[in-house]
Amino acid sequence: MFTSSKTNPITILFTIVIISGQTLLFAEDTVQDTTDNKSQKDTTRQSFPEKRRAREPWEYIVSAPIWIATSPLWLLYKGTAAVIGFVDDHDIPEKVERVLISEDGSREIMPDYSSRTGGGIYFLKKGLISHSSELKISGSYWLLHRHSIELEFTNVEWIRDAFYTDINFLYEND
Image 1 (cartoon, rainbow, N blue to C red):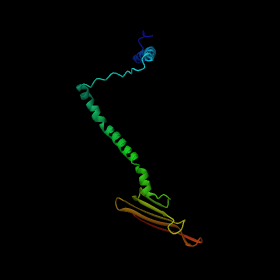
Image 2: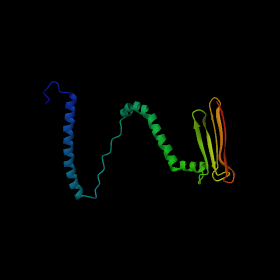
Image 3: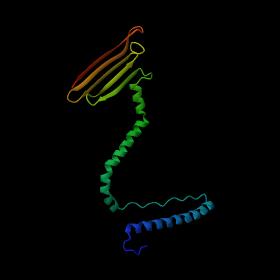
Image 4: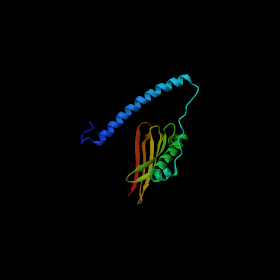
């Protein structure tokens, strides 16, 4: 098998790894059998892994460029974990939802965004005049003095269950 001059070195390495892996698996099985017998004899003694030696100064010097290159990712990871932990521990999303949305759903205040007019706020109030009426107010502002204001009052009851109307007002400045 290895006498051919065309044998690929990667094939040889792969064969050696497979053979050594089989040997290690066989060795683990025999060691496991002997440790099982010892653990049955002495159940009160616990074995701990050996303590690793400290890093040498040259190891710190060699790993410094890698540490410098990966530190922004590590700091991002740790910072994100800290922020998520804080938000989760203090129930921030639930507290914000309780402030912005009423328990019965009759009032909502939400952030609003449009790619044309920018970011702003959206307010909804249900049941202001009658049980089916809705008042919607939104306003947004963006760069270059782009802004938008919208007022919408729907299902306004004028005569008891007979006459309903909608009132809309929209102002946009581009």
